[in-house]
Length: 567
Image (cartoon, rainbow, N blue to C red):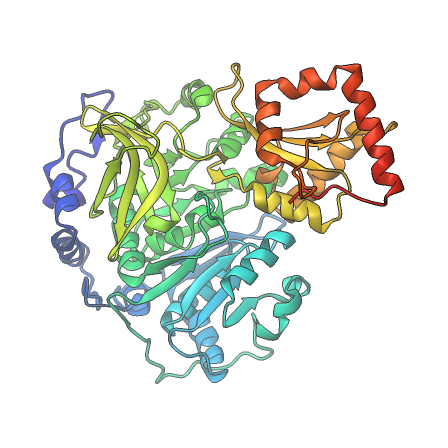
């Protein structure tokens, strides 16, 4: 445990054969002892006085704002559309949180009520999150930029109240009666006697959507123990943060990393730097100003930085990324060489919402792009054999499960033993850009916009590809004159706008036949998916007899005024 704060065993200069970390192994075996020791060490090392007591109670507000003496330090820094810098100190952030909490308390928000924060990453999200935790509310987060996805999230969550800004009120639909104003019309003085509410161990602090799971629209409950303790752990151990650090992760998914990322920074007393990739592209000079000491680099931001001569790593002591796809590992090593990062410490970090923060992290190595990971400290976990596996269970290969509260949760990730560490080569379920690809969600959207051709969405593993691709197969039948390129672009644009770019199919394929149907008149989806994936459908489409049969079917359907249902 002593080593966990002074980074013993977590940093190496160049390549060294990884050695076991006894303190980390002990933390997996006895999480309670680990977290009690961690918080005691934090208070002694950094001279702070925390009110939270592991597995007893948690006071997020006090530990973020009142436990530290230097409140003039920047807590949050953001840039406007013109590239102007706007710092907010911990004292100023506290005042904003107090005002928001006072307003919500006057409206009658009660401890345990569920509030959905509908904001993009920014100052409003940070204020809303901390105000909700001050009042003891159960927090959920939804993205405002994807109307259909937001509609489905709100229907599944059924929150007691929704907080958003006026820019997004039109998206609330039937939930508008639950809206509260993001900003009171007049600035109110926060009640000086308002005391933060304390979460008792085991109480739910968050209900979040985990888009890496096969059930992305089923909210996952996060107990206050995991939300608080994992945030402290992740900030210190995985992210290597102290109160002097400036943290930035431009373009990282809010759905996969928040509220954990914000809380990790604030509980470490560090500065959260909110810089949007789009603003960087518009005003590249910002790269000379941001100067993070800890930087998250995703693939898109890497590709942007590769085209820039400016050096954003001048003060960076550690930069991290997510596990790389097999086809992209060389791209990361080339990035290290291009930017002269051979002496900078780098690592890999994997957030997983249902695990309450970071699921796995790597040692920090100078310049080397390595893919081996270790499960997060203080987390009870195991690997279990695949359900369809017929052989003996192996402790060295399987899906990782984690224990959160009293519940064992299955993750979608395969872990393979590699010495004293682990490889996480891929998701067990079909994923795209770290998210489970929800065919049902995409199909639901296409039905809502009354797309009038039968279709299926098929996951395909092609010999030349190292990852699963998702094809939208449209049964055009004998209809002539379809603008395939135009329709493909139109559907892609609409799916990107209402669901997100990551849910756009990799390919759209127009088949000159109609689908096989069930006796009920719906598409025989399993048969059609198999026929497409094996190539049988393409052979059928090329046969003139089947083309004529499709033309005949279409004539019958038209005369009878019938249509083919996709369900």
